[in-house]
Length: 561
Image (cartoon, rainbow, N blue to C red; front, side):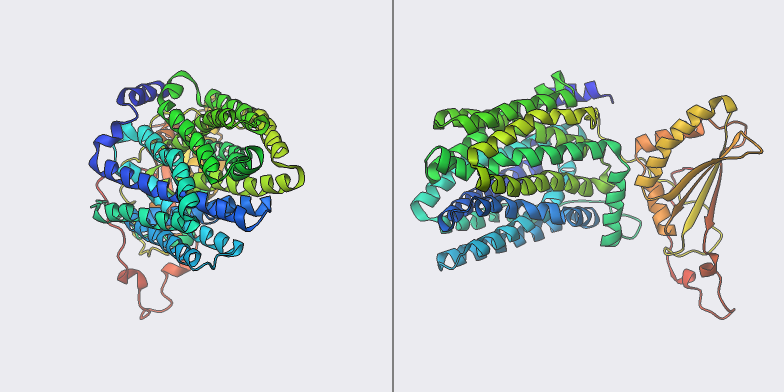
């Protein structure tokens, strides 16, 4: 499917299409309440910090404490989401966040909260949500059909921003009338509906025929896949830059309300609500933007508009004008983040979806967390207005990154290909046998040498992101038509995984490479054990470990490499 039909399908289905599916609808409504509670706590925490200290640095650190865990543990969280039942992972992570919110409520009620304690428990809540995020986002593909996935991504953004629109205003009222302790308690209570809905969800998933990877190996697999996927790398790089610069708005919002608008908790809540209302407007127009503009043009337009809106917030001293500027900022911020999210979701295959989305979360959250700290330090040195003006100027300049990291086109989801049959094996192997060396011989017409070599550079990325290492391509100097592709896999089990991680586009690429092959005989493949002493018993009576291990059962599907 090409990019244009995908856009037409998205527009035809409408942004509300995923709500027709009961599981998604229930989880979406419960997550709306959860997001509402998180925003109420955010208002309470930020305002409580302004009451405990006059340091802009510490006020901005509240945002950092909530977002930094996403950057720090997102890759382990993504690996866990891919390795285990995503429903169970979500339940455990929400329980962690609930525990942190409950403990903070109790300590606030006892009057024992200090700036350090507040930041610590914000970090705990953020850690729970960091673990929750990849499991929740990657499970969306199990709740809705592929054709409605972009709409589901947009709806999840709308859920957060509906909460952003009303949560801060409600939080301001709660804090003004009952204090920060009530805001912390409200967050704890509003986690419960999502816990119940996830507990009742009867998720069905086909168990893998191969053993589960260890956590450290799963993290390495995720990093390797992303490092060898140019399109995902570009999206993550643009996401990080946007988060670094645009994080000034959320980080400095309490100071905008207090110092520029001379307001209180309610003013702060209203300003955040205006930003959230704009984000809803942006989310509702994602389909139209994707239909009319390419990804690069849309991101450039969003960053330019946001730069202007941030400058307007810095120069405006009137609440109405500031709120209007924040509506614009929220709309284009939501559009940019949703475009980045959709780009990652539609580029990553199912086996690494959680880790890819975790990397996306790390990019946006890491950018916001680091940027928030930086904007807080700049505010301490030069003031809120100057910090926002610098942020707006940098946002104006950020489209220049498009000259180096141009947003890739986004089409249909790259689906997993059919499972390949295991190759014929006569040597007794265990899952740990290895390293395995694979050599593939191609006979290519000399006139096609340049084109073949170009295709093989793409094959290299395909092999490496799925688990291979030490890849090389060599040409026989005595027989120029003979080319040999060579790569390694750490173990036999890793090789089986590598074979069956290929997507449909990977398989098409491999077939394209094989189409250069000449002659009636097929491409020749050799699979060799690099350290054969592990497959040889030292003595006749030495126990044969391979005989005690159960090797994966071959499937009926075919395949060559």
